[in-house]
Image (tube, rainbow, N blue to C red; front, side, top):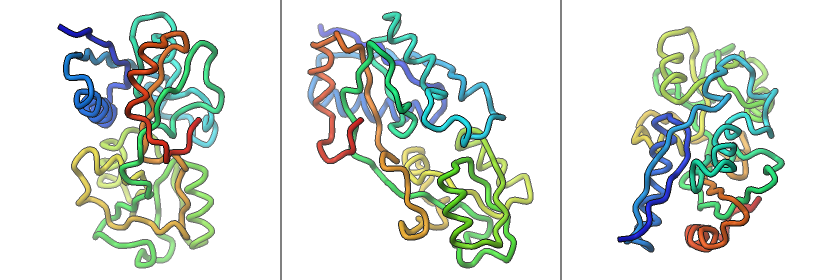
Length: 226
């Protein structure tokens, strides 16, 4: 019987879907191995107030998982690739980045309207400074509202407030089976997405050479590597 590997991840439904995606890929190559999934709350899961613009490039969404990895409590971590910090912690290594399943930013709007059809002065919720700047450049009349939370929380915020639309990663909706909620995949000439959007990152300890070799099988050479 093969070894059981412990995988660290955030607890959200999207994060668990991402781990499921990785496990299914690995099982095609290593059917003898099994996997135990450990959900870990990060600062990003607990703090729903700090604007994303203030923590972009930090380990806000990965720190507690990376600490568990360094302590040997898990064998490897699965992160959304765009959540990786600019500086990877000493002792850790990103060993694989998968191909993006959908690189676009998505508009989810009431009445299924596209950006150009939204009313004058429409309120759009988003958290990313990159998205905010590009939306304002496209239409200066839009009111940009800062929102935080997982996909379910953002969708609920759209339905329960006076927001007209939200902008989120299309990949998250695709992974959760909610592609029908997408009103528009926003063209790249309007919003240029994060270069790693829709891709997943696998991280482990940099001295675990056997696991590094095993996990590298799911790496996409076409991805932008960290």
